[in-house]
Amino acid sequence: MPGPPGPTGPAGVPGTITPRETSVSILRPNTGDPIVAEALCLPGEQVIGGGARADATNPADTDAMHMQESGPSSSGWLARVSATSRFMQGSSLVLTVTVYCLGAP
Image 1 (cartoon, rainbow, N blue to C red):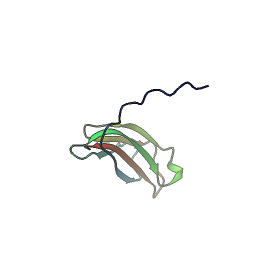
Image 2: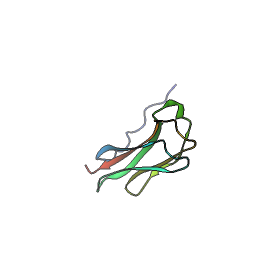
Image 3: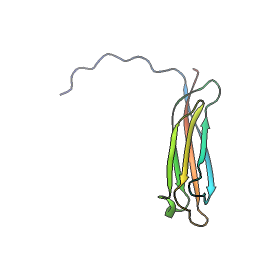
Image 4: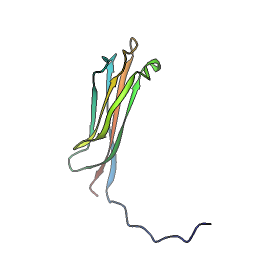
């Protein structure tokens, strides 16, 4: 049985959260070559989160890549991925990076 409600918490951080995204697509990347992308906040905005996604345009290559890094940079979110084996003919590795930026109120 739940207890009584607690006191109201403090107000959240004022401002607007804006997602910003960038993508890089490399046709049949060389095995082990790093593919890097960085999504940036605008000047005056603060990085509050982000993430990265690596996809293959041919589903047969889905297991042929390795995310090496995904995390905040000084002004955005940076990710690095590489192919672990040669992609199929016509297949691309697509790295998409998203950063969430907090703007002034």
